[in-house]
Structures are given as structure tokens and as C-alpha cells.
Image 1 (cartoon, rainbow, N blue to C red):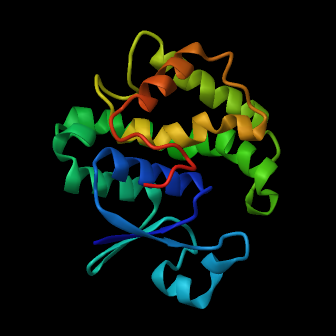
Image 2: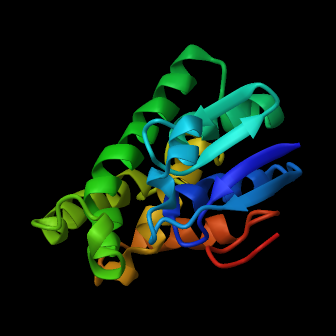
Length: 200
């Protein structure tokens, strides 16, 4: 069975839990105490030298980085639907995975870290401006369409959802971004959806 090294409030862990739930993939969770530095312990660094969560272990495979994990889960358990094999569609999904890893990470994701976990935030300066930039990009993309990358939900939607929808934790309002709000509600209606604090 897949083992997920996890912290409930960590958004990169949440996106992995969300996809696992959407695809109904059996797994077990191992809690790692980020606040007290367990992710920097010698035992954990043997597992992941980057000292970051999440980590997934499946037999001999030890996989780090939430985006890489999402792609692996989608390919292994979701077929072509969540991570397409068509080269053009795959490129579009990868482009929006990058936006989730960069623009969303440096904007609303870091705004939340700066507020809730200031010791874990790398750079709290300018998060409001970067959040506005990221959210406007996603709002523009979602205006007149249902999903971020393609005409169906993909790992790009799953990757972006936690950082965007938890923006309020960092004092960033989603009210100016109606297309983002509509998309977020659409995500919540997907079969198998779980919220940040929901265990499954």
C-alpha cells in the first residue's frame, strides 16, 4: 500500500491527499511534525534529502515533490483523464502545474505561510502583490471556461486548488476573482472531494 508522509495543514500534502481521494486510491498516512523540525531529522533526511513534505513510498519507489507525486498518481491510477498523454494536452497541463508551483506558491501560498507559520515562510515581502498577480492570472484563465488546463479536471486543477482556496488564511480575499470562486465551488462538487481538514 502507498504510504504518504503527511502534515494535515501543509497544502502540498493536501493536494496529494485530494487526488488520492478523487481517484479512490488506498493509502496510509504517516504524520511528520514540521513545526518541531521532524522533516529535518536524520531519519527523515534519509528518506528525502530535501527535507520537505510530502513524500510517497510505494514499494521501492520513494518520491518527493508534490507536483511529481500528482503526476505519478494520475498516471498510475487515473489513466489519461487526469494527466493526458496527448503531447499538446500534456504540455498545457504542465504549464499550469508550473503556475501552481511558482505564481501560486509565491503569492497566496506564501501569504498563508507568513501568517500561520512565519518560521516556514521563505520570503514574506510582497506576498499581497504576488497574490494579486497569481489570482488575476487564474481568474483570466478561468473566465469562460470550467477548468484550468483542459475541458475537464486535471492535476493542474488539483495542484492549484489548495494554495488558491486557502488564500484567506493569509489575509488574501478571493472576492475580486469571481471565475476563481466559481471554479473552486466546481472542484468541491467532484466525487471524492475532501477538504483540507477532512480525513478519509
